[in-house]
Image (cartoon, rainbow, N blue to C red):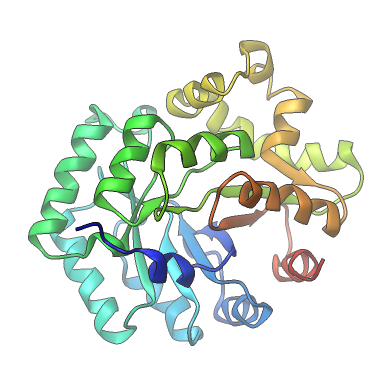
Length: 279
């Protein structure tokens, strides 16, 4: 019998906020929830889940998800135990995002599909529900694994063209929640000056992200020298709030259930997030 994931998918809302692990202070987390965002994603490969309590404690109902826990620097049995600790205190609010990272960062790196599958085997043994897991996924095999053994997929650094491809791979009733970077600035040159560095380093030098961009039709010339303007514009939405909202929502039009907005640049992200959600 096919698992009905619709209630879990709806819990994420259509828009969320993505930030590095530890980025959001309690008052910022509360403000993000009050603005109406559905999910806070915490990225950066945390080695354990306990600090996530800071965001959960500061908020009342918003979903919190890891984007992602790296399988190479965590023990799946220990992560499962920590998942149940969070579930006991914050029932229904935490979703475990899992992924294999990238080969340049891990000496033990091997075929990610096989390694993630084994990690999921342990989570199964520990009875972490499949519908409370989300997988980092870019290519066809990992996307299908996301559909088969998790609630769905959380692609990172992808334009809406990838979202359309991912939905075709995932099918229906599977969460598709891409991340998208944003610079709220109407000057395209200034916006690219902020957006290009965090895209170039490290992502345009990592095999899995480069391979995915090439699969979508981007060329070596687009990827070289910090990324072409066209590539940066595809990966980093910029402009006034209404223009940014239109660019971000292109993921929803392409088949995403949810898009996680990552605000780039210095300063408190709450102000830009308020402008975008109200646009």
